Image 1 (cartoon, helix red, strand yellow):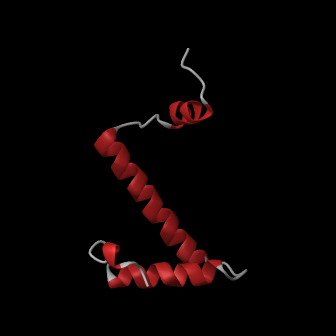
Image 2 (spheres, rainbow, N blue to C red; image 1 turned 180 degrees about the vertical axis):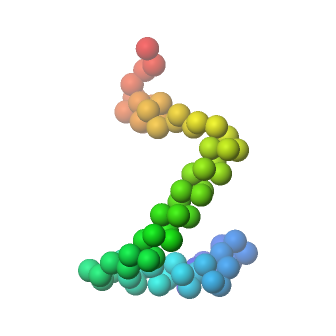
Length: 72
């Protein structure tokens, strides 16, 4: 069960889908249809973030900071 703190954010449908995905991931079987749906959701999410915020070039600076590298 998802923690009570997150109940207002996570709908029962989303929780059921998540738990089903966890069970599926624990097997060696692949569900091509579920993979296609997930890829579509990820693509839409990425495009929405790009439209709202533009290019977020944070990866390299964050990794350098974590490693202790100083900017040039």
